[in-house]
Amino acid sequence: MQGSKKLVLILVLFISTRAYSQEEGILSKPGKTIKYALVAYFSGGIGYYLPIKGAPDYLQPKVSKWSPVSTIRLMWHPNHLIRVGIETGHMRFLSYSFKDSIGNNGRVLVNAKPLLVEWSMAITKRLNLFAGSGVYFMTTKLDYAGQTSSNKLSVGWMAAASYIHPLSQNFGIGTELKWLDAAESTDGSLALQLQLVWKFLKW
Image (cartoon, rainbow, N blue to C red):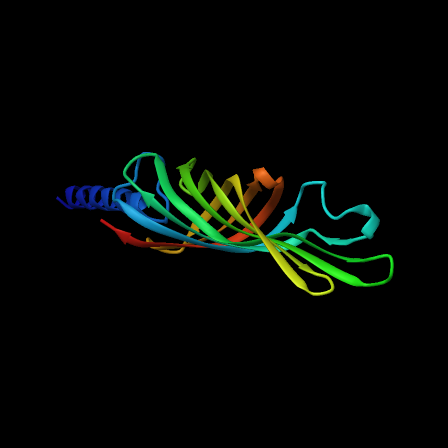
């Protein structure tokens, strides 16, 4: 009798553990998502400007290709493999300072705000791939004998891979390696970000 009770207890614990493990963490294994959910990703880090182009050589510029990149992503997680969402944020592609032939100093900043429609797929329970396309709202600021700025809309895309460590069923922290490319203006940045993930609504 005692052996039967122990066997039943072991089976109950096993089933409970399996049910919990499927729900544990922000992202479940492919095809194993039990509930629909809305998940927010808050990311911040640093990006490196990869294109060769920059300031004209005759200006003898001092180029800064390392710049901050912050993004917010909202994803809908249905009960199948592919998820969909949107991403926006603020980033600086590059900045450089220069001096003209008569000694006047100047500075140029190239900033962007992406607005992208994205898809994602869970490769494992913690590793995820993202891809998307949309537009980048580009702003170039010139500080040289006064301040001026120009705006441009550039079609572009992104691709990313993230690794998320669950803290609970609703929160996780992770890192993301992301390529952001404003293709029309040929500006691109490879970013490494820290990430807070929040499953704020599920049903």
